[in-house]
Length: 522
Image (cartoon, rainbow, N blue to C red; front, side, top):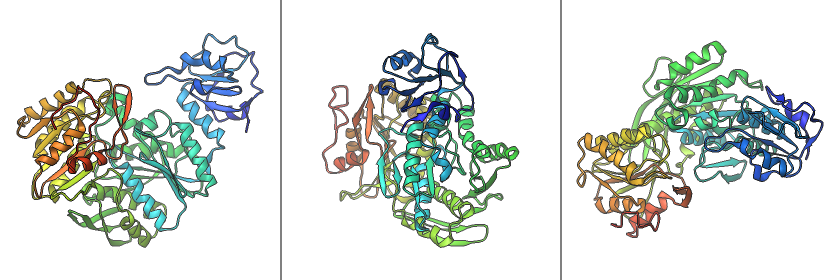
């Protein structure tokens, strides 16, 4: 249904008309930032992207019938008859325009933003289960999928937070499905690139802030500032009659940083802690981690209850406490429904997911792809096995290069045997990526051929690990988790670590690529 351009422009916080002679009294049939999707009556938004500058395609958009242009820089098309609007940030403008296009759906839903370096998806799923146990009409968008009412939608291969138009479209579908609460997993990319701008958050939750994505943000300071923007946005979001509240991890260094950010904004906060931090409202006692479950006692401001979950590890207890704090302390969910939700969550795809093919040892697939999550995952499996820990992981190409050394050092310290392999090398040399990690391990005392190996093909690496494993050992495949592809060059090839590990356990390694460049040794 067409929308008046003047109505869409009302959503923009700042803009200027670059060609005053052009008329803005027109209707818009479509909104896009992809010039290939432009047809007659389209509002085309151009911005400077990470690898592509959308301004290069303005002329193409005009030729395809664009009715108006929103961009960051005045172009040489100011003599065009169609209106051209200049904005400070094209991504931000796209988000506001998308919200207006879908009639500001977030204003009709309680919106919870969940961010952090690690644990976002698990925390989101815990909170989702608690709300479902309370019969709330809840939907969610996470890095695995989007769940809208009773419908599950896949969100992509290497998805972080979907782009702003997709987020707003999902939110509109949620409104139409009768959703009361939306849980939106919010990455640093999503925040810095305005993918969740105009989501009108009521609650913001953080799991932790550790070393990650410095290739995108440039520094830890910029990375944490991107995360902090979610919490700062609470002060400026539309009032929906719900106290704007932040849920903070008192055990993480981000606690003091975020608390200081919130103080002048007069935003409420609640804290959670595994270590009984004095400022935490929600803590845990009697935590017992076993090979197949974790039992613990939740202690809140006015309540105490026992619970158990098949998820293992201290970090998953922290994720659970984060969800408890949001559910009980902020959203008013009962203690009993919260406990039921904890126990109802049987697992999260690719997060400490056990793979069984009749083998005499434990096999696990986990998404750990940061130094912090690798450390936590290896420490956790160490707790549950009397045997050796055999880790298989790699580091992605064209991403934060500093973590290659950090992860090598962690593996040298915490794994008995490590197999370094491919993980989305993209256009970088796979051998060079592995070399950086290998040298870090050697400097930490690891011995190639004894405590670590290099196997370029990920399928063969998993097979090697299963052949090395004996009774009571743990083989853990790290870094890919739920993902459904692996990137070589600029191509995404189908790949699932869970299928590959099953194949390895059956004695038939699933090859990453039929390439002569890969290690040919099983």
